[in-house]
Amino acid sequence: MKMDNKIYIHDIPGRLRIRTEAIKRSEHAAAAVQELLHSTAGVLSAVANPLTGSITVTYDVSQLSSTSILELLRERGYLATETEQCERAAVPVQPSFASTLLMEVAAPKLGKMILGWTIEQALSAAVAALL
Image 1 (cartoon, rainbow, N blue to C red):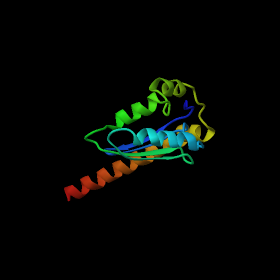
Image 2: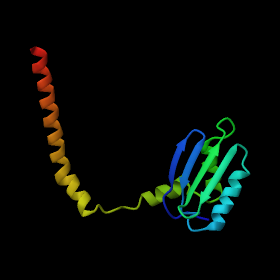
Image 3: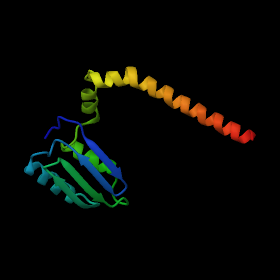
Image 4: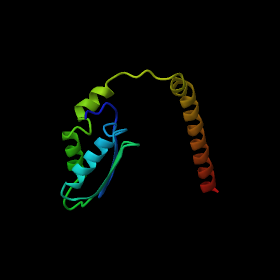
């Protein structure tokens, strides 16, 4: 169950949500990861959704950490390793016309507008302080 795409992780103590292609469109993989997590000490609940590729884990922070859950999922092939993620990230991406236009035209103009507004506000505050 090798993952060929990016993962998304949202982590707050006691609750971890992961999106991974490894279970997307696979009832079998979703059931297997859910069973794996349910058998892990400290996991209070685990729900794997094959439609979205999302895994939501609620766990006892005194017994388990999100890092150990993620490592378990990596070991079982549900998440890419950091090396695999870095290799995919190293593939150069060509900027779109819109992003190039934004970087070259709109961003400098927006920066000048914000700077002008900031100076205007500072001068108004200075004048008000003198009066």
